[in-house]
Length: 54
Image 1 (cartoon, rainbow, N blue to C red):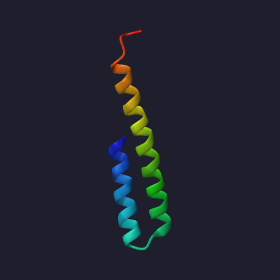
Image 2: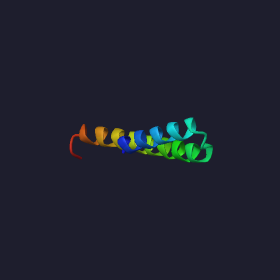
Image 3: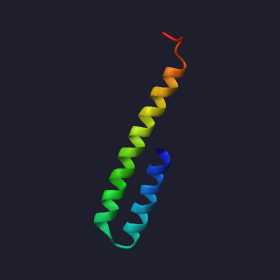
């Protein structure tokens, strides 16, 4: 999921450099959402893996 966030971030940066502000804004918003969801899932699975099996 973090990989897709980076892909959308790169798309947003390229679109922004080309002056396509609508596409750049949408791509960066998608990248931000995917990054946050991926980070939350990573923390969840990390904490779940450390539990004692309850």
